[in-house]
Amino acid sequence: MVRGITFVGIPVSDQDVALKFYTESMGFKVATDRPFTDTQRWIELLIPGAETGLALYTPEGHESRIGQFQSIAFWCDDVFATSAILKAKGVSFAQEPKKEPWGSTAIVKDPDGNQFALSSNGKQR
Image 1 (cartoon, rainbow, N blue to C red):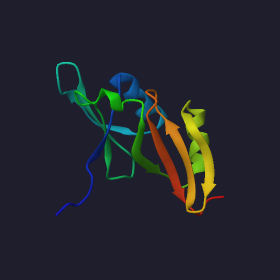
Image 2 (cartoon, rainbow, N blue to C red):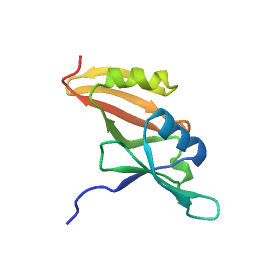
Image 3 (cartoon, helix red, strand yellow):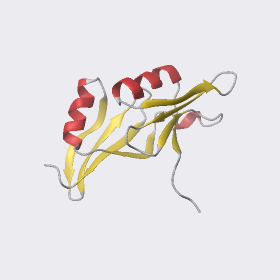
Image 4 (cartoon, rainbow, N blue to C red):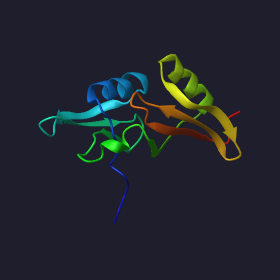
């Protein structure tokens, strides 16, 4: 029986730049960083306190996915507070934090222009 998601892939153009962003700005931890092909490494990251990880890897033929909206939502306790912390670390936003009827949301951008939702439930602001 399926029990969860091990990792979600994020297509990136430069693994070193992406690794720096996701570890230094977003606070993720390296689980694996090893050669995978002649030109790429397999980089798997863990989100502290979460069971699902991220893989900074672009399969051959999927380069067009780089810089697009990714169907990934990161959750946090408070979108407004987390956004302020991330902005102080130089993280860009495609959408500023805002309150919605179901909770709060913002759209984060990585160095490749990939966009991700950042959300929290309705208990904030």
